[in-house]
Amino acid sequence: MSWQAYVDEHLMCEIEGHHLSSAAILGHDGTVWAQSAAFPQFNPEEITGIMKDFDEPGHLAPTGMFVGAAKYMVIAGEPGAVIRGKKGAGGITIKKTGQALVVGIYDEPM
Image (cartoon, rainbow, N blue to C red):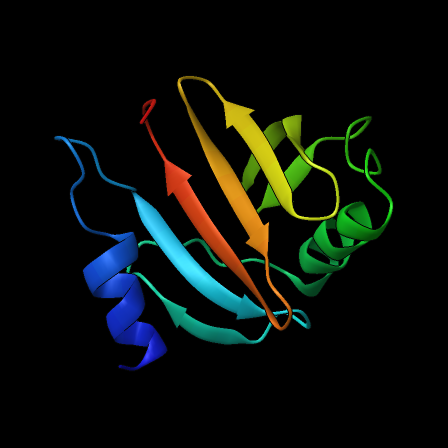
């Protein structure tokens, strides 16, 4: 199974009537491995900030986390493993693996 198929068939699937608005799998350097059609364009500085927050939990808390044009308030996650952000009723969850970042963005609580 390709990474694109994983995004399309697993990350973007419906679960109990809910689904992500967009998702992606990125390398630690920001290289896109796979993404949904609606995943926002981001800049390298955003990925650098996210990776720094994994290494230094709390780094993004004062300024918020940016992904594309959206700003998320960083909320409780799992230091070094998961970053969560909130924007209105929606939000973002980023899981760090050994080689990649798995990103899910949602418009309403899941």
